Amino acid sequence: MPVDEIEIPDGQIITETGAYRMSMDWYHSQCCDGPSISSTGLRTIYHESPADFWAFSDLNDFRFEKEASPAFTYGRAAHALLLGDEDFEASFIVLPKVAPPKPTAAQISARAQGRVSDAAAERFEFWDDFDARAAGREILTMTDLIHIEHLADRLREHELLPILMEGAREQSLIWQDEKTGIWLKSRLDIQSATGDFADLKTTRHRRLDLIMRDIRQHGYDMQVALQTMGIEAVHGIPFTPESYAGRACIDIFVHKEPPYHIIPVELSFDALVWARRKIRAAIDTMKECIDTDIWPGPVEGIPVYTPDFELQTLEAKVEAGLLPFDA
Image 1 (cartoon, helix red, strand yellow):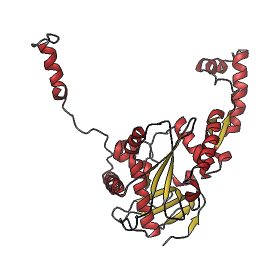
Image 2 (cartoon, helix red, strand yellow; image 1 turned 180 degrees about the vertical axis):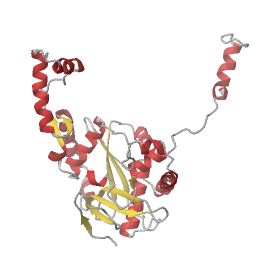
Image 3 (tube, helix red, strand yellow; image 1 turned 180 degrees about the horizontal axis):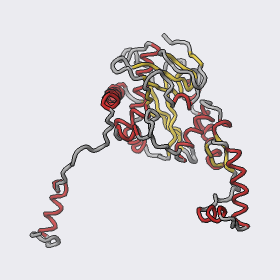
Image 4 (tube, one colour; image 1 turned 135 degrees about the vertical axis):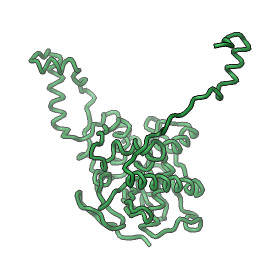
């Protein structure tokens, strides 16, 4: 049965399985009373390597800081405006179209030496004021904001939205894995009153085959699979064909540019069975890495290169006299 949602402030440590209302920043932190991970980390472990996860993990005291990419900022801003998952004004600032280019490295160096041209002075005046007002917020261009507003209009017109929007949005499901003790986190974009749930994805692809490729390459199937595990642990809905008969698990791809296509893709039960296996493998790998304090990269040992894959091409070149037979 569904459980009541618990609202918690930043800084409050989670010690019990539940459905939580919390800020995006606190959700992505170590907000539990033990090591925790969301689908982003699990997908990184599985598709890249444990080392790629560990390098930027806040479990790592010597982690690298990862700067937000324009694509990540766009996606996060789209979620904030389309789903209301965070305070847009508190998290983002919009860069005016008339903004001058940022000062160059040479201009910054000249300024440090007390030499600033009139053109550079105008740049510094704008950017000093803008950076002060930004106060750490992510920068969104005016063009991106206009695109997102058009996206919102198209999304409101889609036949799926009224059904999906009847339920909860941006609910954080948090539970402890029974096998490893690791805390798992899954944040549902939309969980409808009918039991369907969906994730919103921005894309530049118009072709369905490229969207399907992205599901595999970016592990979106694993993201939805972790959601099914969270729904099972928190809401008590078992992952069985019977329980999921008529329950849609959907990735809604919204195109970033005109005409702002809306492309919903349902993940089949069989696809989620395989994706849950990938999630299980990633959780077990994380546990092993924590226990051994070894976070291996994508390639271990010394692989051996052989020309087998291009042997036919090489032999053809030898026969054509394009490649010497003797080295």
